[in-house]
Amino acid sequence: MKFILHSLNYSPELTGIGKYNGEICPELINSGINVTAIVAPPYYPEWQVKKGFSSITYAREYIDCVKVIRCPLYVPKQVTTLKRIVHLTSFAVSSSIALLSQMFKKPDVIMLVQPTLFCAPSALLFAKLTGAKAVMHIQDYEVDALFGLGMMGDGIFARLAKKCERFLMRRFDAISTISYSMIENAKAKGVDPGNIIHFPNWSDIDFVTPQTSGDALKVEWGFSYYDKIILYAGNMGNKQGLEIVLDAAKHFGTQHNIKFVMVGAGAYVDTLKAKAASLALDNVFFKPLHEWARVPEMLALADIHIVVQKKGAADAVLPSKLTNILSAGGHAIVTAEQHTELGQIALKYPTIYDCVEPENTTAFIDGLTKMLSRDLSSHNTVARQFAEQFLDKKQIIDQFIVDISQLVQRDKH
Image (cartoon, rainbow, N blue to C red; front, top):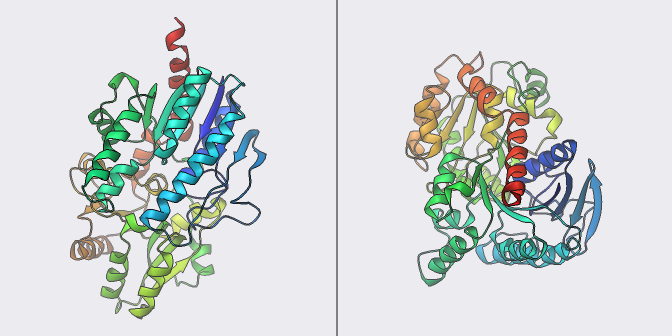
């Protein structure tokens, strides 16, 4: 089988979609599938192209036997709605040109990862011309996220965006997505249930385990044995609403053993640092992204993990960081409304994590206070058992290979 991945993000990006893409493609190779990845140069979550890569030229390389074609794109230093549209459009144009180089190589599957929906027309046209099966894998419903975060109003443009999304999604041979609530969303957008594949994000449960110690990193970062670490790790962008963490840090400012550690990068990191400075918070520590080899240590360091999102984002964007927290057996507080999938998981698996109302500072502080009163010295067995049952990397990817193999064979009988 010949498989093309069409996506903005890829290894060596350390978080989110790029990390997952960079893990699945080598696994497909190991299963005997020929894989080409048409992607952008690594820029996320810093919103800055990494050293050694170019945003203005095409480049080709092999990573773990995967042929990777890097396409130029515009990467804004300050992310606004308009600049993000230009950013997505630039990749849609450049990657469409890269697809031309694969036109006569008889691919069996082209999988477009959303975001970005802007690439859907060229991916569908490519599939039509080559006979390849077209799969859209939805990591984020970007149109829903824009509406949920109040970035697009409800005018003519908004209604047109929704109609275009529905039109495009229904023309793919299959839609895959990462959660059951996102599957229901696809159905609501008119996708045939028989064309939907459940392909959740995963964790390497043999690498991220509760047995890892974070003691050495705790000392390295200058914390004492008695400090309680409240950790946020991941992208620092608009959809997270991380100002609530700084408000909580201010509340706990007189409890000197409680430390808030924010690890990552993103479009809002400088804004958050400036706010922390203006509030004179000496209990908030910003750290850069860590290489994957030390992620289990970082997760083990935390007494409490925080997964923060704004209202309206929790079902459009399922936070990938949560998979590793669960695999590590972490104690977590998640901002999610009860009707969302995150809220429903918390109801179905009591103590897997604590849910509080998004964008509610009082509820967030109360939730942290409640968790800090517990014995957090042992790992969260419910979280770890959930990871072992539902988040195992090999099991999830093996099932996806079965699903796309069946898709390729579907019309041959």
